[in-house]
Length: 249
Image: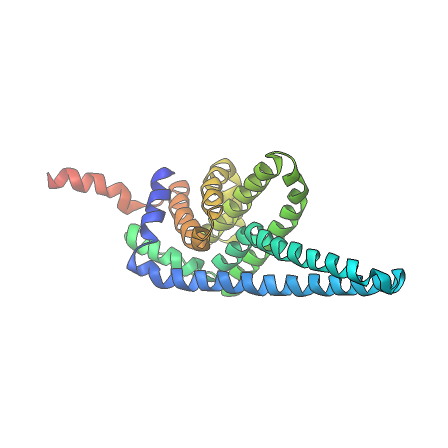
């Protein structure tokens, strides 16, 4: 598993991955900006409507205190959006990965497993549905976990475990569905759920690093391509390399 993680990390800096890196990072930033603007507008509207209602109920004398309160709420809203962007990052990267998973996987397979039959690209609609479903599930779970952040360490652990499970499942199934029907890919993941979960912890650790986590789709997809090869029994090139080295001596 460590070997797979290092291979995924090193390949992220290869020339073949550079274009995919820029595209995935750009899309992740665009999604975060759109979500942040939408959330800010909703909260700003709610704050303004609440201020107007309170002033009408309490009278004109309450205008100044309510204005101060509205300013404080605006500041809190801005900080909340920044914090929300951090917590939404796993969901955003899961969505972004659905657009670039095949391109990333093809690079990994061509570089590390040229003797294996190549995977089949997923239909874009199938990949996007997978990504959207994971992203929405992530949001629901993170909203549930958010109140526990007030308890020392409990919320952070819950958030990490949920992220490891969700991203491990998402990236493994995207890699597996290139070689198996959807039901078989899910069954393979379920049969190896402990291994996939531990692998998901690597991705959860990666996505917890600010700025670097924008590249999570590359690392997560490449990492799970290697993990799928090990679980499904692929990787003939890697099995032949030790024999080749011994013959060359």
